[in-house]
Amino acid sequence: MSELFHINSAYLSEIFKAQIGKNFSEYLTEVRMKEAKKFLKDPHLKIIDVANLVGFSSSSYFSIVFKKHVNETPANYRKSLDIE
Image 1: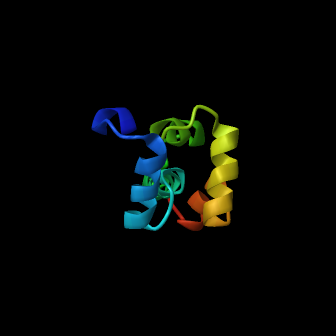
Image 2: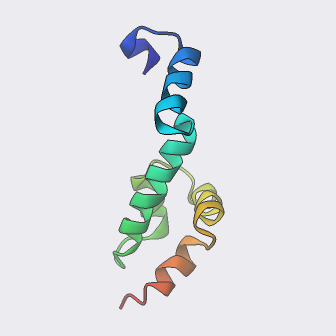
């Protein structure tokens, strides 16, 4: 993004944090987890598919990040939705 706007990446990071209240990677992870929750409502999607759809190439790393942010694994989250 810094190249797109022709500004220093450290400066862009400062601006982003000042405006949003968190750094870019924290914000991106929040967006990914929010989208993952939506995708997990679809019982036809496998966990690995959800991971790929939200930008993770590893389903195991996705599960670690998801659990850290949602306090349960993607599989347990899906079960808690009681989807048939």
